[in-house]
Amino acid sequence: MGTFSLCLVFSAILVFAHNTLTCCGYASNQGKLCGASLGDDVDQSTMHCMDLFFRTIMNESRTMQRSNDKNGTRFEARTISDYFAAHVMNTQSYYGIQTTSDMYSVPVDKDEQSGMFIQLYNQGNGRSNHNAISVGWHVYPALYGDSKTHFYVYWTRDGYQKTGCYNLNCPGYVHEANVNIVPGVTIDAVSDPNGVKRTIIVKVFKDGVGDWLLHIGFDSEPYLIGRFPKSLFTGLGDKADTIRLGGFVQTHVPHLAPMGSGFLPNNIKAASFSNIQLID
Image 1 (cartoon, helix red, strand yellow):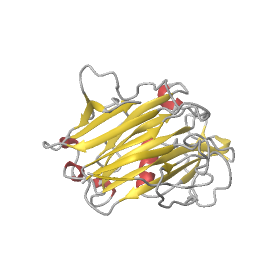
Image 2: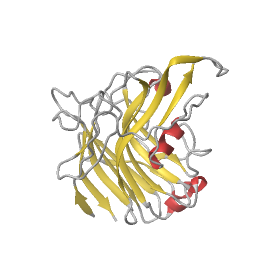
Image 3: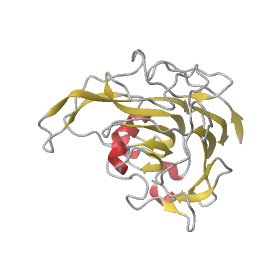
């Protein structure tokens, strides 16, 4: 098991990333989108969550118009864009990771979302063979019907095309019996940028059977809460070849929703990852 620290720096939604010896910051709510990879395409359909996660894999951000008509024929004046900032590790085979992240409640509109992700995946051969596990926290009113912070999981074995889902919305992720932390649960104790910092410790690793075991702790040591069975995956059933840590936001432009804590990484109030340990 290897341990290290790193930092992502971006002033706006996504500008640039580099390594330091402190932590991994992913917060922002202001400034020019000067470093994002912003696509020119306009999609007339509603943005799906699996598209957002797939673009984190493919290093893409996209702008779209959000329809307010169920037939997709009338559009709001404002557009929706989704962005992410992440540190990528893809130089070896990986069998797990443990890291600590701050948790926040951020203001978003009902058709926006903002959050943090830890993503393990195996790229396979083409999108249809992309296997991935995503774990983190987010504020996602369209999914939960509220503006609270929620713990979530997501998985796919075909690049978010036909397989996988959030939380327990389809068969796949198997939660342990008699545990309090269930995917989708509300996280009430979140950080105050001007006060107490509350954290989530995430530990995901592959056991001897080949299942990916998920351990979570809120301000405490993580404990086993569930697993992603080996049978869900193809390449990821063997190993992960890439790990990503970062933040994401799906937001109206030009009035941007915050990512992380809403503060820039050069501010002590910025959100962070720390105590990163790789299982290789």
